[in-house]
Each structure stands twice: as C-alpha cells, then as structure tokens.
Image 1 (tube, rainbow, N blue to C red):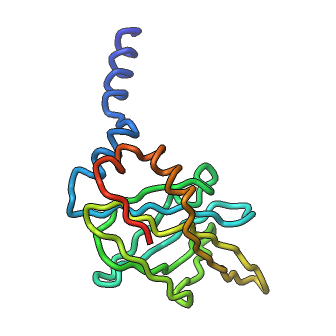
Image 2 (image 1 turned 45 degrees about the vertical axis):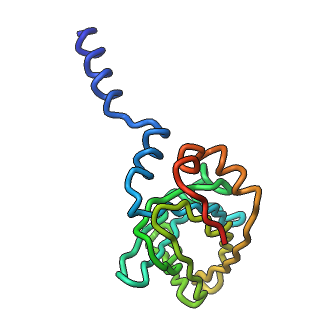
Image 3 (image 1 turned 180 degrees about the vertical axis):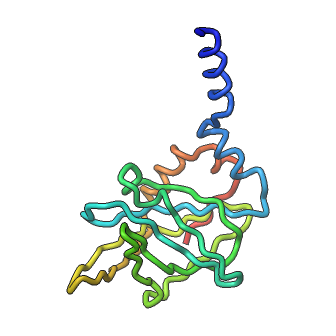
Length: 163
C-alpha cells in the first residue's frame, strides 16, 4: 500500500507545472502577447473578475486572477491574442456583472512583447440594489520593478512595452 501511495504521489507531482515552466510556456510562441497589469478593487469585501473584449474578434476573456484576494495589488500576467481590447464587464458573485462599456477604456497588446497596461483600480458604488463601478488607471514604475523580479523569465525573453 505504501508503494502505491508513493507511486501515485510521484505521478501526480510529475504532472504539476512549476511557475517558471508556466512563464516559459507563455513566451514560447511569439505570435501571442503577454498582458501585464496590476488590479485592485479598493476595500471591496469580495473578489471580482474583470472581463475584456477583443475589438476585432469580439472574443471575451476573463482576467480571473487579477482581483482575487491573494493577487490584489500585485502585478499579474495573461497570455492573449495580440490586438486592441476594451474593458467590458466587472463580474461579482450571484451573477452581478455591471457593464464597463461606458468607460470606453481601450488598450492594445503587441505580439512577442510583455505589455504593461497600467495599474487598474476599481471602486464599487452600490445604490438602490444596483452596482456601478468607478475605474482609474495609472502607470507606476514600481509595478514594473516588481514585475521584473516576479516575472524575470518573461522579461529576459521578451521586450517590455509600457504606455
């Protein structure tokens, strides 16, 4: 029984991918772009997901890890098709998902580059059972410095593009 447990553990662990391997895989195909962003939903009690929409294809992508409790205020990366994107939705629990279209916030990501699009801050405004979201963006050199340490394998392989 002990040997079986050891064998199963070895098989499961061999299937796990390390963070470094994950980042190496991200930059293995230069036809893709890497989005670098730092997000925060100021003092909100719950995590949120931000949805972006590719303007050309209409494809929607959920930036799931951006405003989770463990990632709030930390730079995160996502692999995307190159192109122009727009903030489209802010997703919360119980199917609460206000549109962000009124913000008219667009950004572009280029293939073969790590694209820093800023530090995004969301502030939830609750009123009469409805939710509105205020949004601001700033470009912070400290975010880039943190990203250089956290995602060094990405930034040694690909050029950093910042606005």
